[in-house]
Length: 115
Image (cartoon, rainbow, N blue to C red; front, side):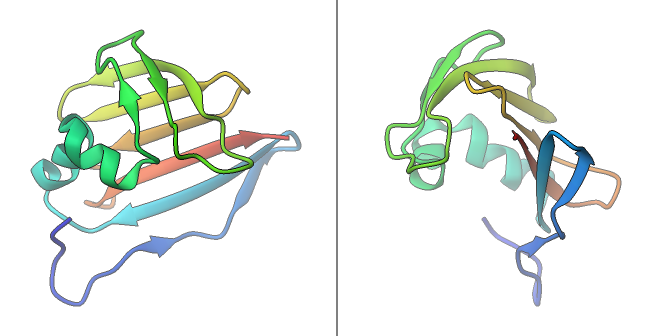
């Protein structure tokens, strides 16, 4: 993704919203359209999202054929608001939510992993 000069990925400290969940957040300072293109364009998404194969629609299935140990490799698209939000629900109960623009003005990806 193109980013503003001097910017980079930033990972917040993992926090536990409950005793049963670990949460990781990454922010990517870039234009909303740039961030969304790396999700909506399956060819681009495959390059960075474990070779993702999906039906890019609400309820559509996804599969991550290149995912390693500890990463749920299958699930469904739980939420989709084009240009804004993509929510993935994995079969193991974990979730990933991509927001093209959050309150900080950055694109954001949040991964919740149930213990």
